[in-house]
Amino acid sequence: MKPEIRDALAGCSTATITMQLIKRGLRATAMRGVAPLAPDQGRIVGEAYTVRFIPMREDLSDPSILGSPDNHQRVAIEDCPAGAILCMDGLGNGEVGTLGDILAERLRVRGVAACVTDSATRDAEAVLAIGFPVWCNGRAAPPNITGLAMGDRQTPIGCGGVAVIPGDVLVCDGDGVVVIPRAMVEEVAAGAVEQETLETFVQERIRAGYSVTESYPPNAETLAAFEAWKARRGAA
Image (cartoon, rainbow, N blue to C red; front, side, top):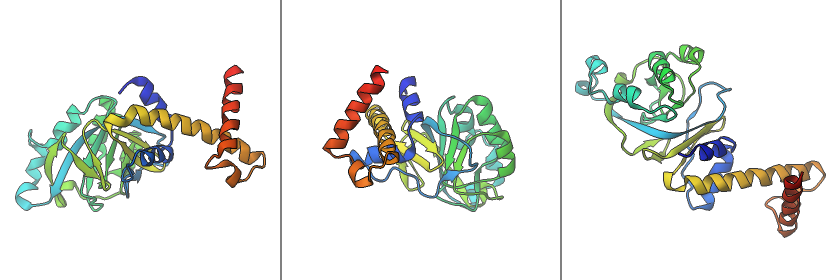
């Protein structure tokens, strides 16, 4: 992802981005049941590196799997690039944790931007103390092997009811996580910046006494006033 695209998306809310995706025909882009672990994590933008779990089966979920060199989650912890977001499909299982404090610390040290999972986080207080940004569906004490088995990595997954393809761009903020298909990132970023600018103008109109029906969605008069407002700002 180009740095200027990352910066543009970092200035736009997930609410704005979902509207831009709706305008392009994509409605199922906001993860359900996935929320920030801490209330002050800010907004994180990064390309998705995916890990997929499957339902637990005893022969696949023995504790010895945690130390296996073939454990895709453990490989991902070392392979996920700096600046990317580790996105794990935990089948929406909020009774087990797919991230704990040791893994979170390693991701932080390696420069990974954040972790997103539709399962829970364990060692949550320790993860919070580390300061590594996490979006998940809650907290749980048991490890993933009590409810999940290892699937694979860097393949298409579902997370929070949304399809995530490796390299898709995730935008995470206080409202949740939105997935932008990689091929649409630049146009969505441009549209989101313009929408945020328009909404700044609309807020000014509302404060000046205009009604919502006069202001948003913008009619021809509002759009003309918006263009004049932008021109004045550009000349200032």
